[in-house]
Amino acid sequence: MFRKILIANRGEIAVRIARACRDMGVRSVAVYSDVDRASLHVRIADEAYPIGPAPSRESYLVIDKIIGAARYAGCDAIHPGYGFLAENPALARACVEAGIKFIGPTAEAMEKFGSKTAARHVAREVNVPTVPGTLDPIESADELIAIARQTGFPVVLKAVAGGGGKGMRSVERESELAAAWRDASSEAQNAFGDGRLYLEKYLLKPRHIEIQVLADQHGNIVYLGERECSVQRRHQKVIEEAPSPIMTPELRRQMGEAAVKLARAGGYTNAGTVEFLVDAERNFYFLEVNTRLQVEHPVTEMVTATDLVKSQIQIAAGERLPFAQEDVVLRGHAIECRIYAEDPENNFFPSPGTILARREPSGPGIRLDDGVYAGWTVPNDYDPMLGKLIAWGSNRAEAIARLQRALDEYYATGIKTNVSLFREILATPDFQNGDIYTRWLDDYLREGRKSDTAATGSDSKRAQSAALFAAALWHAGNGESPAHGTRADGSEPSRWRAEGRLGQVDREPSR
Ligand code: MV4
Image (cartoon, rainbow, N blue to C red; front, side, top):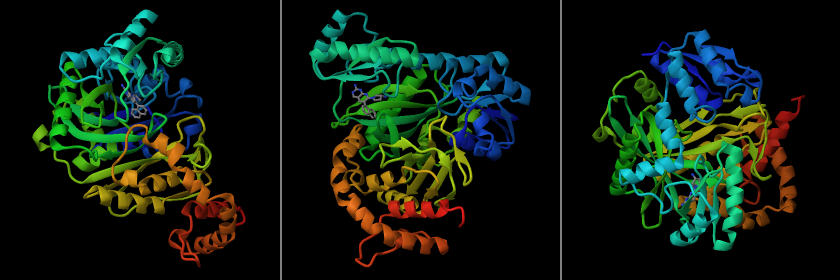
């Protein structure tokens, strides 16, 4: 086993990795930019080294600084987390050259799946269904039109180097093809330095379901069930759950075996995720492979009783998977909310700032993976995700109820958070019925919310303010939340606004 692991990341995932190290008796080393000196990951790791200014281009993304810090600290392995350098084959290569183990797949496997067209080729070779379309980049305008006609509209143009919706454009009709091509190609060129595009049939209302795999260096590969990630906002996942509400044991086996076949064909090792689109008839189509630990890994951990970060470290150290496919048993249901410092009432505008006070939910079935603390200032240089709130229940209804309870307990003042959005989503019949698809949240925010805004217009807001402010003061004095207060008319006060009032109370320096 390793003696010391450098964590090439920040925030909640760096904290998560440091915790796994501690559980395993391995020393952990944090790195931090100038604005992260006081961050939680620095405090929780055993050692910490500065790696430069706030912009990630000059700190968390500089391979030489990461390798230099690992050498200086005497680390024998590097965990990249997610984002930053996690899917950059150059870091995996630099690790090989430095004689340091990279906790992830090889640079070659990363490259194979990093190119979306190469990945489609692999899928085709091993008979994993792909969305109809091209297997290679499109070379000319004539080819584009011919292939679009042959595939049938609507189609979607995607970046060869892409992923996560960047450089992607759906096209309804032939007249829009040329403009969409220019837009997608220049976006891909800007984002990835590679403007090449390929084409797929555009599926309407598919679900996004992904399979977690673990592959050791001895040829053992298992799948750990699926995660349903259809609740997204502008290609950013917002809520994830395991299992998927539409899954059947037979479909799970088919998708799991497809994912394992792909991983094997790509020479994949360590933890990875195979993404699929699933249509209304439960046909599944391979989308892409994420060659990293994912943000939403906890829901899989909760329903499989595994520790994926620990498994990653054991695999990188050369150990064999300690269980076989038939040992993987799913139990209960887990749902995760990504909590962001952003304002859901103001177009999700980022809301960095100092966290003045905060209450962490807990209790049966609740897990909070976060990277913040009261008194800490959320920097505006990085993704403003504060952490993830995860609920486990013996079934989906219990997981939802526990998550709702935990969301009601959660508050942070000084910054705005998107917690109210989750209360709203979890209360919708669509979510409760599991009736969700990839554009569900975007549609809901555009259409489904209109009636709500009418009911809580500014007049009624003002009318409620005075009473809520008084209630907040009373509860603040008692160290309680007004969450379960009842007003004279018997209606429930809005927790969002009430805690907004609490925020103002906390902001008063004289208190
Ligand atoms: C699609 C699709 C429909 N048809 N591909 C968006 C992110 C990228 N990973 C793939 N994405 C999509 N690809 C075909 N052929 C719809 C989406 C999509 C989507 C996928 C997952 C989650 C949310 C989404 C929101 C809009 C579109």
